[in-house]
Amino acid sequence: MTSLNTRKQLTSDIEEAINDGARKEKACHLVGISIRTLQRWQKNPDGDKRPDADKTSSKALSKEEKQQIVDVCNTPEYCDLPPGQIVPILAEKGTYIASESSFYKILREKGQLNHRSKTKKPCKKNKPKEHLATGPGQVLSWDITYLRTKIKGSFFYLYLFLDIWSRKILDWTVEEKEDGKIASMVFRRLSPELDENYSVLHADNGSPMKSGTMLATLHNLGVATSFSRPSVSNDNAYSESLFKTLKYRVGYPKAFDTLDEAREWVTSFVRWYNYEHRHSAINYVTPDQRHSGIDKLILKKRKEVYEEAKRKRPERWVGGTRNWEYQPEVYLNKNTEKIKAKKIA
Image 1 (cartoon, rainbow, N blue to C red):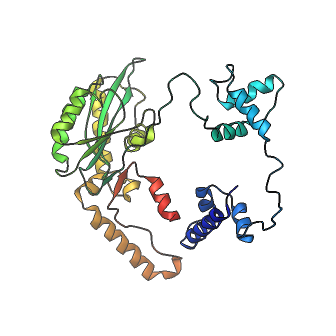
Image 2: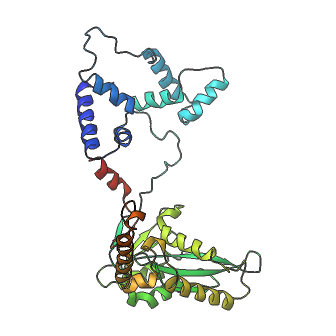
């Protein structure tokens, strides 16, 4: 049961957050209570003042039942199993002591809610560090994708390096194998594009990405490394999104016949993507316009056109004009928890 002082403090914090613009539902969820609980606390800020009031719930387990749960979980038969498996097995034997959540609660109270198996405890992989790009050449992403060939089970491999700030493809190659030496060669080729003060290269955990040759190249060039968590594609979302754009492009072949054919098609795609494709994430300018810096003038002109259109026909506009603002910052693996905390504070 939550103490009276804690109730008052939580109520005060939530009300302050709501006054600052936070949603009541989100604020309650953050501190682990429901809206109904908050309403009850606000209605009775001093709690139940009856000295002889029974604060014990009729649903609460007795001391004997709690001890029975602990004893059962520590028997040789169940000591290596989690409550999620113990409860169903007991039910099969015609025994019900308490719900699965009650098992977890009692074990937590007794300090026994730990890894129960003799196998190695699963390790939690932390999200990659957040990186901020404020200009070209600062934060890059790269990956390798398969290009299907006309021979079943055989593929060509597209190496592709992307600047996440401008979304421009800086360099690429199509080869017959995955190799860190090839990746290192391509990266050295694009290295003049890097920011001399700050540069990061993000990749997944593939063997070419962590090869000794590739890591040595990055070290020699003064480029910091960033890697995705195992089996988490969202950590390398920029490259994954680009590969989807490539493979959903009109005219993308179901399979390539030769390596030269694959390279020719990717050449035409890169030319279209960098110089013709209006990218939605950078307010519909091309990656090359963004990379070269002329997107500021383009967006400014669009804004002026819309404002002039509104001035001529104001009755056609309910609110403001479309947002053509320049976006100066782009994040890699942005810390969303930090943003949520700011909204609640």
